[in-house]
Length: 319
Image (cartoon, one colour):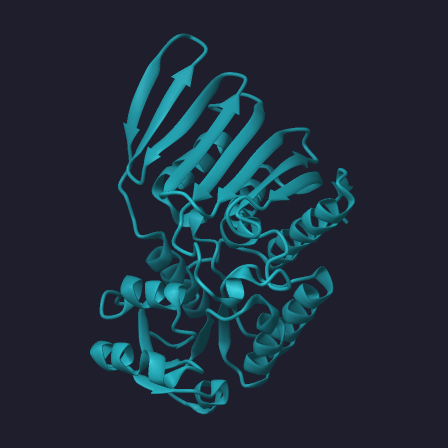
């Protein structure tokens, strides 16, 4: 059993708790940490979790094996380095860092300490997404031409939070939601070569954001996010022999050039729980983790190129 501490009890920190607390035989939440103790005290009590305001409390707790960082993006690097120094495994929400240099610092600290890094790009564990990866590797799409991904919702609309701070998320929803597709699409096709991005302020700052990606393979992709609309999810894969659309967490629609179509059912999973259990399996030596340190760094390199494109208004290379 992997004993964890959740650091940050905002919207997504509670999603972690909802996904695994008393629901997993691989991951146990031992304690929670949040600066706003008065604001989260009742919730922590309802969950039966010990609550403190100091990150160091989790690092000093011998019963805690790993910390789960659901904290502002700018804090990730120093928190990862501190946790590594304390011998704690670290699962970080995305983005992993705000620049490639910090991402490399975190990877180096983890390697030196011999701890496992985890990353909250949960889409890799989704059932339809996993089936698409299997289909790509089996050659069922032929040559992959283009990918499309958009997760939009108004959960954070009008909400005063660090998530609306342009220093924490220069690309708005491309950081919060679009980054999931950066990681997922790189897991499908490999590294991104260049990007073009834009944001628009319609109702609130950075409420609409899109990016076009070109991969080293020559394939292209679109990613997008709208922060002021009802929830909508879209994932499409277009190949020379077939295309696939994710209809819901348990179904894909597939169409082939031979004229055949199919609704393929897959067993839906909770991807947040699956990612945390994959992290636990890697620590226990039961299985390799789906994310490599190099991929974690590349995700940040792509976001940094998106930042440059937002400033220049031009296509930017991914270094």
